[in-house]
Image (cartoon, rainbow, N blue to C red; front, side):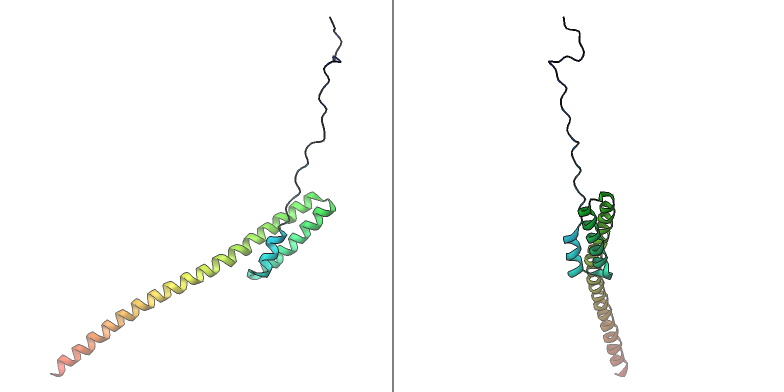
Length: 125
């Protein structure tokens, strides 16, 4: 009976390096799109600046700073996109409700004036 420890016929599995975490995203394409097409309050330009900083830090190997700048770029991109989508929709909604309100007001005033004019004609007879 073999009592030696560890047994030589069972070798422990080799452990390699742990899988590397994927590099942080820099959101550069999204920032370029926001800068060119939907630059609400210059948030697209700010997002582009942080996206470029994130890419620079990622290339230099500073993962923590790249993640920090990447999260800021994502935040500013989301704000720029939301502002550029929500504000025109809000403007259209305000215009539509204003037109509806003005049309109702015009109908009421037409009814009021036709009543007064027809009443004045009756008094003259």
